[in-house]
Image (cartoon, rainbow, N blue to C red; front, side, top):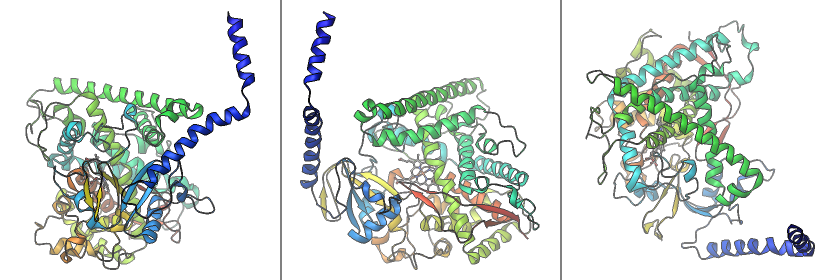
Length: 581
Ligand code: HEM
C-alpha cells in the first residue's frame, strides 16, 4: 500500500514541468497585482502622491538613488513640497491620506467623545501579540476597552499626588547618573585628564537617555527601582551589575517593541508560513509570553501586598498600585476621574488589562522623552544666546546654589526652560506623524471620505508653517515664553499652561486656520496622558544638568543625526560635561 502511494507521488512529481510550477506561482501573483491596481484605480478622491508598487506600495521611495534609506520625516517633507498639503501614500496595501496643514486636522484634535476620529490604526494584525485592542495607544476598541483603560491610565498619571514623587524619582536618577558620569570620566576638568580613555559608545548621549527613561518609567509604572542605567556601565561605575529582574524585564520589553514592527507590518500568512520569518516570529511570541507572564507575577505579588496593607496606611503612587485599586473600595478617587467618558461600565481592572497599560507606559513614555532631551542638548549647544537666557532664569531661581533640591514650585517658575523644551520639539518633533481613522463617512479638505480612511497627521510640517510661526527654522524659545508670560488665561502657572496644552501657534491671534499648530502631545480625547509626567521629568533633568555643568558636544560641526519612523530618534550625539564656572 505504502509502495503504491510512493509510486504515485513519484510519478506525479516527475510529470510536473518547470512551466507548471511557474504557472502555479504566477496565477496567484497575477491575481494579486490585478486586485491591487484595481483597488488603486477605483479609489475615491484620487490625490497626488507617489505611484505605488504591488506589495511594497511607495516604500521604495524611502531609498535614495544610492540605496540609502531616508527617514519618514524627510520623505513626507519631500512629498509635501512635490504634491502640496494633502497627498496620498501607499504603505503595502494600505492607503494613507497625509495632511500637512493644521486646518485639515481640526476634527482630529477637537476634544469631544463624539468625534469621528478617535480610532488610531487601520490594520488589525497582531491581536495574538497583544498590540491590538489592548492598553491605550494601539487600542481601537473605542467603546469597549479603550475608554476604561484610558480613564484608569490618566487617573494614575495626572493626579497631583504623583507629581511630588515623580520629581523626587527624577532627582534620584539624575544624581545616580551624575555619579556614574563622574566615575567613568564623562565629567572632565580643565586638564582633560580622562579625555582619551573613553570610547564613543560611552559618550553617546542617546544611549544614556534611553536607559534613564526606562529606569524612570520602571519606577513610575511598577514602583520599583530599575537597573538599566546601572547595567549599561558594566561595572565601570563601581555599582553592582546584577542581572536583576528589572533588567530582564526591560530587555524583554525592548525585544517586544522590536517584534511589534514585524507583527504589524507582515501579513499573517507570511508570519505563519515563511520558513525563516516564522522562526523569528516564534521567538518574538515566546518573548511576549515570557514578558506577560512576568508582569502577571508582579501584579499578583502587588495585589497581595496591597491586601496586607492596613486600610489607614497610604499606598504607593506608582501606576500599578493605582491600576489595582482603581474602582475598588481602596481607591481614594473612586468614582472621580481626571478624564471621564460616558457609557463606560466602571469596574476594577483585570490582570491582562493592567499588563497592556503597563506596556504602553514603556512604549510611549521612554523613547519620546529620551530623544527629546538629546535634541534639547543639541539645540542648546548651537544657541549660546539661548543658553545665557536659560542660565539667567536658573540663577534667578536658585541663586548660586547649584545643588539645592528642585521643588514643584521651581518647575512652575522655570518658564523659559519649558519654552526651550517646546521649541526643541517644534524644531525636531520626536512624534513626527500621528495616525487617526474616521469611524464614519466624513468631509476633510473638501473631499468626502468613506469610513476607516487612514489619515496621517504630519506634525513635522505644521510645526514649521510660516502662517503660524515667525522665522520657523530659527530655534527661538521666546515664541513660547512670550506667549506664556502674556497669556491672559494663564494663571501664571506655566506648568498648568502646558497641562492644558492649548495647541496654539505663535501667531495664534490670527484665526482658526492655525489653531492646532502646536501638537507636541497630540490633541482631542486621545491626547497624550503622560504629558505632565514628561514635562516634570524633562524640566527637572534639563535644569539639574545645565545648572551645574557646561555640556560640550564632541563634534560641534556634526549635523544632528536622526532616524525617523512614526517617532524620530537621535542616533549619535557624543558629549562631555565640565563643571560650570
Ligand atoms: C516628551 C514626551 C512625550 C511626547 C512628545 C508624547 C507625545 C504623544 C503624542 C503626540 C501622542 C498622540 C496623541 C494623539 O493621538 O492625539 C501620545 C500618546 C500617548 N502617550 Fe505620549 N508623549 C510623551 C510622553 C509620554 C509619557 C511619559 C507617557 C506615559 C508614561 C506617554 C503615554 C502615552 C499614551 C498611553 C498615549 C496614547 C493615548 C491614547 O491613545 O489614548 N507619553 N503621546
